[in-house]
Image 1 (cartoon, chains in turn orange, cyan):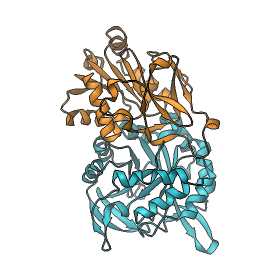
Image 2: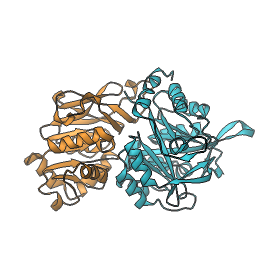
Image 3: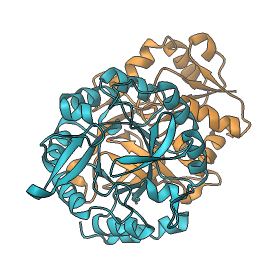
Image 4: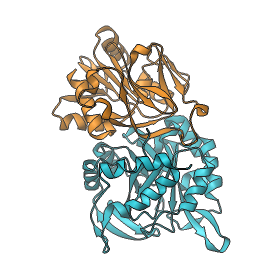
Length: 204
Length: 261
């Protein structure tokens, strides 16, 4: 069973609907009790870093979540700000991140972007897989995903990078450290490609 | 590479979808949830839904409708209409909407842009400018409350201000071109494009795939939004939801690459 963490941020229902259409059992967890025992975890996110982080910290689920991710090594997929929260810190805020991945979140450098590239990075872009990762099964390099962000995930170790996207240079749009995965784009809003990725996460 | 966005803009009135001409004469075109389901199948880039009653009638956003739309959308959703406070914006983002559009409220109180961006992040704050050309003075002016009320503000000046305050996107909507399907106001689009580094989306006037292509050729990766084009078919404006195929959209990408700007 996949548990979608509902801490009041992100497209909970859209993710749940995709799994419903795929006939993959998924449930929405709003309390520590509902989250306990989760086999796989999706951590969605939309909004500013501190806003999302403080809501997660206040949700009452933080302890169970840390335990599932770190002690029990359950697969976790962080989406957009949900991915950024996996890092130690973010340029966007002052709160501490979850610190589950050795990484920080940086603001896109305006100077590195061309005149034709605007901020935020908004719209459909390509993700080039860096490995034969099962998250990209049946997607390969043909996937298109919806991005909506001004900050990007910068892992300390390049081995964490599963996929890259070009916007004023390459940035890590998909990362992994052990059982923890993160995607900068919104798979729940990326049509067939996002649906495949969510299916792959459920079946890994 | 980042692709141009081709975005249907749907207007809601009394719970139903309508399409207007020059912001008036609303014609009923169907049910919003049903339209979203069809647009899902067509793999639409993103969608804008604006409740055109809410601001004018000083109503709150219809949260039940927004929640249903967000759950149904398999593409990103931008909601607008009746949004006046940061609390409303937080609530709407919490319902699973990616972007919230503010217009009258942001123009009346530009600081709303900054406070909203601080809470939900710039990327989720969209400022919509409804613009009319004041012929007597040969200049553009922002209108509010469904085009009923002039503000004396020039869209270029306000675009710069919105960017400084932390907006994440500008939607430039031409009241003069709305529903006419004779092409975008490229002059207006060009003036705003040149004034800001934000992503912009142009709305009002698109009547054919060629109109989208012309905009993209001129401005590169930009948002090309349309209402009538995606809900009407043929000379008699029969209601039929439609959208370019993936290959038609792919053909636009090289044109974006060749754009001069």
